[in-house]
Image (cartoon, rainbow, N blue to C red):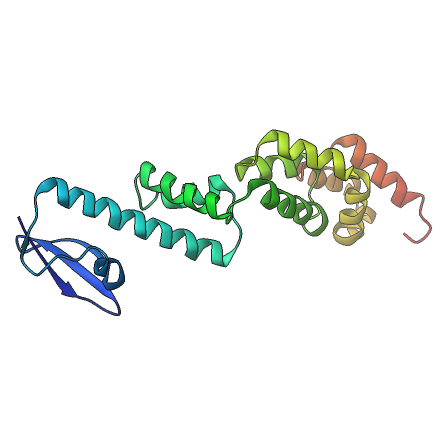
Length: 203
């Protein structure tokens, strides 16, 4: 098979086998795996070259995604396998772990306090969100134990900021309870928050 190439936009380089387009890489990558124009290449050499190109692309994708925000291992892998095979994705992730760019425990800590303090999520919804991001139950439970989440206090904050006016409407109390239940708060926590509001002269 004859390997040839054509320059694309920027530093893109399009590779061809026997005149048919196969894959795009970069001039920087190809400089380290140089083949002369119309070089003869056998199937094993070609497959090895394609594997290296895809790995280089996957690593580049990791850097791009992680430069925008932190990710859990699961989040990053889920995004990579949309464009790369699982082996290539796993090798790129292993490199990110080796370099310290991926750390589920550190990521989980930042996410946990964001969900608790900024998003005002119930403990139940925090657990669901952490699980969705691929954070282990052990890490999540350790964070919950250390944080001592105040579900009643969080429910109180949400009701007073979003639903206070609704409480004075006909059937408003039940509507607020239903809304808070959908946010993952238990009836006992909601009721305790409502009693706190009802016993507070400011409201």
